[in-house]
Amino acid sequence: MERKPLEVESTDHQKPSSAVYDGSVTAVDSVEETKVVYRGWKVMPFIIGNETFEKLGIIGTLSNLLVYLTAVFNMKSITAATIINAFSGTINFGTFVAAFLCDTYFGRYKTLTVAVIACFLGSLVILLTAAVPQLHPASCGTSAISCSGPSGGQIAFLLLGLGFLVVGAGGIRPCNLAFGADQFNPKSESGKRGIDSFFNWYFFTFTFAQILSLTLIVYVQSNVSWTIGLTIPVVLMFLACVIFFAGDKLYVKIKASGSPLASIAQVITVAIKKRGLKPTKQPCLNLYNYYPPNYANSKLKYTDQFRFLDKAAILAPEDKLEADGKPSDPWKLCTMQQVEEVKCIVRVLPIWFAASIYYLTITQQMTYPVFQALQSDRRLGSGGFVIPAATYVVFLMTGMTVFIIFYDRVLVPTLRRITGIDTGITLLQRIGAGIFFAFLSLIVSGFVEERRRTFALTKPTLGMAPRKGEISSMSAMWLIPQLTLAGIAEAFGAIGQMEFYYKQFPENMRSFAGSIFYVGGGVSSYLGSFLIATVHRTTQNSAGGNWLAEDLNKGRLDYFYFMIAGILAVNFAYFLVMSRWYRYKESDDEVTTYDMNGDTIKQQDKNSV
Image 1 (cartoon, rainbow, N blue to C red):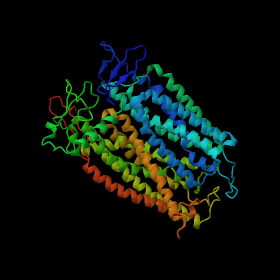
Image 2 (cartoon, helix red, strand yellow; image 1 turned 60 degrees about the horizontal axis):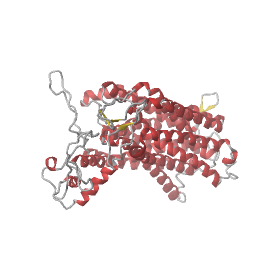
Image 3 (spheres, one colour; image 1 turned 90 degrees about the vertical axis):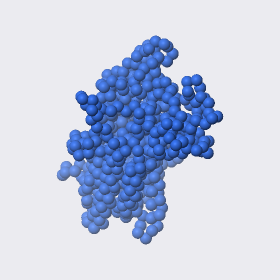
Image 4 (cartoon, rainbow, N blue to C red; image 1 turned 135 degrees about the vertical axis):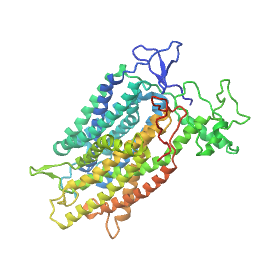
């Protein structure tokens, strides 16, 4: 499918117009030029308001889902953890499908319309599983002997709700951030500053929603009522829908412009067809190149990596061109620009793989610390207040939020003076730091679990956790260091990845750049499920006992943490090798900064790690 200029839907009786990434606007069906009205911050109350309530709704439903499946649906911990990992992975993989549909057929606004409605319906179905007695199994109380699991119908209704949430969250994640950025003029200075500020607000609302959900909403669910606790996200999701649709006539809505996947397929296909041709001696001069009018992407410089792809742009005698220089058949001849865009994507993939393995840490820190907290002393003060187990994950978010401020205000200016790089360190260095802190988080997790288990086996306990085991006298506050380190890892790794994919992908693949970030999380979720199932199956009949026993005091969760730390250590070494090999994207249209006398100030070395 040939990609068209990025067309904007007409609003307020404007004539149709096309907007491309460089900010130019031209008429589509009329000679008369029309203007796209970028309202910027005027529509942000609708977009950020929707984002806040939508995140509160989704996270409020999902943050305590692990405990909900074990406490209300009477599932075993390993079954619930496997379902959560598989569910998270499916949502993340769904972002890739949503990005494809968004770019190819529907555009961001229509995709978000379906997604926010699906999230509301998913939250409502999950609420009904708690509110209607026939939709969940009878309570087990403190006994596990006469405990019956959910019926097939109850599981089916639960999966219906999770399915709606997959559609909703899968559509919102890759499109929401880009849709907000669409509201600013990318050519004007105020528009560029607005986009940067919007990204900051986006991550702020995300962490704010997680912190509020993991404290207030989780507390209501765990200590007041599951029905009331799950009603809150439904109400919030309804408000998110109302706020989003209230700004309907004010938004800039960029229509679908065709999928870039066709261009990738063309390069690979033509390179295979022409594999017998001899490579050119001077590829940057001899390879065929052509830029269509209003081309959305920056013009890339030639790179000598993956030279087998260059053959797709060799102009053979049998290749025909149209009058304007465009190939007559794009499945027989591609441009050097197309080839370089495919190289950009191929270069990113080894880094993406390392980042996917890194997310194993975050996946485990969002699940097993909850079980650790359930069998630890969660009392706060002498008033008898007990912190909900799922709330401890908030320390991961808090660590991330606080460190982002420290990183931006203190660390970057300090490193800038040392390295001379505007961002303090390169994007790959930032991702690498995230992997390192994730490794430290797992090591600390192993030692903390060893301490918790030792306390439970050698010192007086605090009673029995329902359907688990003895509650260790070790304070659950000991979980804070591992979660804080995981939060610092996210501040480095997650944000670094998001920015890396956004800048290194071709401009017409920005939706895919957003989705590949979540697909990496999906890979780690499925890998986490595989590791849990494998370790459980391998160790359950071993002499040392099941590492992941239902009662953590009978298991060896610390060994599991150390095993993942070993995997991450190997992954870190692999990442360092790939980082040395990687070349940052360079274009012919890059702007060089000059001082008042016309002398070049400085340019960052893009090929530094």
